[in-house]
Image (tube, rainbow, N blue to C red; front, side, top):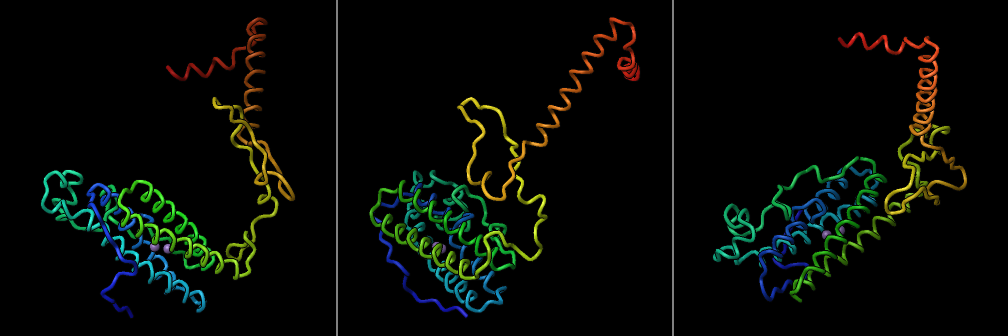
Length: 270
Ligand code: MN
Ligand code: MN
């Protein structure tokens, strides 16, 4: 059950409201990596979770994210407030000013409505924890960019708090995944096919305009890894070799007066 206490998890002070920055803040309110998405993703994963220790973790963090939603929503509302009365402020985002009355709604910074498709819930605990680790990393980098674009010290302070908590969550999810004791490549129960899993296909070849070339690293070499030239490239080489041979044969054929079969098909095009 939920209970609401009329106090923010972190005190929010805004000096100069900036409606355009308020609009950017909505990315963390109703955006793909925002606080509502985090709160619902972890909470719903928790509802599905048979592991009671990690269910507790998911519910703890899912609930904290709701408190973050309250902070970011309050912060955004304070920045958007001039849109209620100022025509100039309203021009920063007509959707918020005209449809939303200068308040917060579940949109991202581009005005796209929040969607449940943001939530990554597979019903497989270790897979979900990996999604959460990635989600926290994305939330962290979005907060960092917001801080970079912010001039108001009070706003920066609140964003620094929210950004820091995402690292705390990142660490907790990583520890929860590690402590499950699964091999990093052990996903689900079915083993991968042994003759295919270790092959690395060199599918991007040649030299690029910026000097890019084929690189080797631990991802495509080392114990158990077989580096395989791109199957499509080999096929193209074989095909181009055949075509060259055919052209050569055709050339000779014309000279000897015995090379007509390839031309015959074109008669079907009439
Ligand atoms: Mn958060
Ligand atoms: Mn978080």
